[in-house]
Image (cartoon, rainbow, N blue to C red; front, side):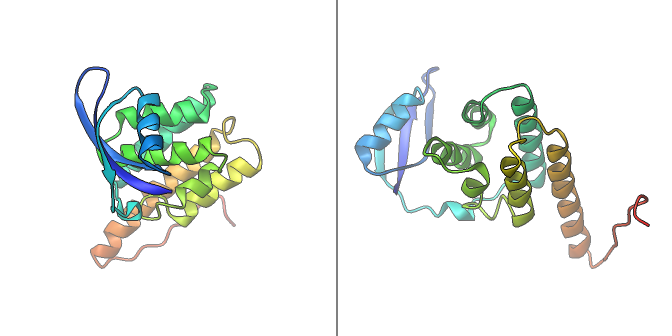
Length: 174
């Protein structure tokens, strides 16, 4: 699939732009229309999505919101669409790309692996474990584990940048 940059109007007649994956411009137009956008301009894009980055805080919020939606019984595709509408533009495009992959039958973890700057190996492995056990929507603990990973990862990067190394200890481990 190719990448296309687009400009469109949403329902509120607000001009939006972004990037979409499609086999051709006709498919790109149809995808935008299905997302209730009125396309103005669609041109081949060259942006490398794997370089997109978001803050650890934004990732943590996304993860908690996704967990809440899945726990409430909201389908994954609907959850991603809802969250993409709330996200900042560069993360919106990532979520829409992931949603497209899921619609095509790929797994959530597999789709997230396309964006290693956002979803690292531990994150995608945790998601994969939830998918493999068929308990991703029901498991509330998976979100805690992923969120803790995000928070610990951010803290570690901050401490490492300051030249301070620390060891994580757990009370429950003998």
